Amino acid sequence: MNITSFFMYCFIVTFTPGPTNIVILSTVHNFGTKKAMEYTYGATIAFGLLLAISALLNTLLVTILPKILMVMQIVGSVYMFYLAYQIYKMDTSKTAVNQTGTFMSGFLMQFLNPKVVLFTMTVIPSFIMPYYTAVPIVTISVIAITLIGFLAFVTWALFGTIFKEFLQKHKKTVNVVMALFLIYAAIMIWM
Image 1 (cartoon, rainbow, N blue to C red):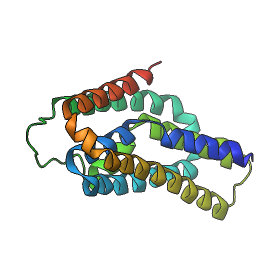
Image 2 (image 1 turned 180 degrees about the vertical axis):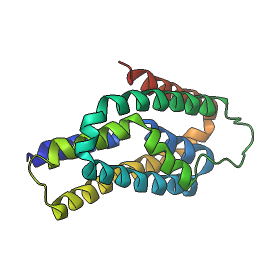
Image 3 (image 1 turned 90 degrees about the horizontal axis):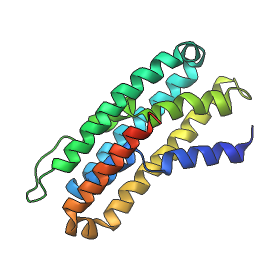
């Protein structure tokens, strides 16, 4: 296995903007770092679970992959449009208690996030399984990839925390830009 390309793939996919990273940034912006970290923990656990499912059910997933991809594209795109709308319409004049920054919303988002689902379904069979099939090595790989994902999520939360004052000053503009990023991500699923 080419370890360099494996790590490059993992870092590029997890650190680049995607629905989860954008929601983390938005959560820091609107509800603070604590809520964003709560969301991040849920997202990380679901990310690791998806990797484990991919490793365990790889053979089954390959046979039904086209059906899963189509369903995930539809559900994921609709959900991303919904998130974009929620971010866009967020009332910036008052603070409200919202459930978008919860552990459970972070957890569930991963199962509807096409970027995460596609990544978890491809990284194990592409980089690990052709070279290693022993359970301990596959398990260590799942843990390592999950930690990379966690680092990416925390980086986005940290970015939001560092630039919070700027983000607060330009709240409506930031919400519109984040909503547009989500719309772009949803459209790119079909390209």
